[in-house]
Each structure stands twice: as C-alpha cells, then as structure tokens.
Length: 167
Image 1 (cartoon, rainbow, N blue to C red):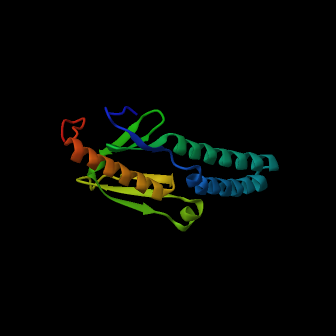
Image 2: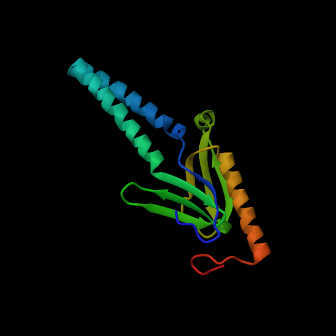
Image 3: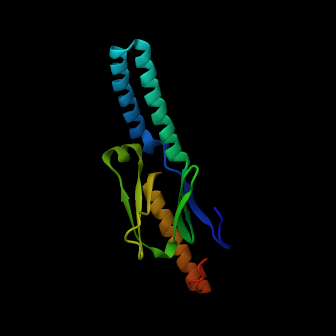
C-alpha cells in the first residue's frame, strides 16, 4: 500500500484463520459424504481419494480467502484489497465513516471473529465490510482512534488535502 505523505497505519490485517473454520468443516463433511459414496460405489481407494480431494480443496480455498484479502486502517482512510491475479481495491476517507457496526454469529463469538461494517457518507450501494477479523471490537477502536487523529489534524493544522485535491 502506498501511503500518502504524513499518513500512518493504525491497523493492517487479513481475515483470521478462525473465520474460515466453517468452510473447513463443510469441506470435511462433503469429503465424508463423497468419500462414502465413492467407497460404496467404486472402491475403498476411490473413497479415500474423494475425501482427500474435498478436504484439500476446502483448505486451499480457505487459504486463498485469507491470504489475498487485506484490511488496512490509516489515520486518513480505510482500505480493502482483494485478489490473486486481478486486484480490487476499495477505499474511503476516514472522515466519511459515519457508523461502524459489528456482527457476530454465535459460532463467530466462540471463534472470537466477526464482521465490521462501515457506513460511509454518500455510498449507500457500496458494501464496505471487514469480514472475518480477529477482535472486531479492536477494529472498531482502531477506526475511532483514526477518526480522532484526523479530527486533531484538522483542528490543529487546518484541513489536510486529500489525493483528489478536496479537503
């Protein structure tokens, strides 16, 4: 990530390995079902191979989901970067963040992961969410800290210009 002059990183992370546990569980379950079918219909070797392939696919998909998604909070902006071959980057200025909401299912609470959803000014159609983060409350605190730092800069030094020339 290219930082703007004077920009400081407050949070930088990827989805937690615990956030893909349900994907791994579904992979094992699918492997058991397909393995049992292959075992009964073809041979025990085919059943073991079917199980191993399902588990391996689930593992690789979970790994790719984790490694190739990056969440960054700086004192000037929020940023989500996704992609392996092609790259998608979604970002917004920190002063545009109006509400920060967290979501955790009962399983997420057990695994201590969750989603942090950001409501930004003027972007009703945009889904700006950090999914699967460790300690969603810590991410909310990081955004609050970033907003306070940005407010201090505006109050103490005047408005800081942004990349697009707007203040």
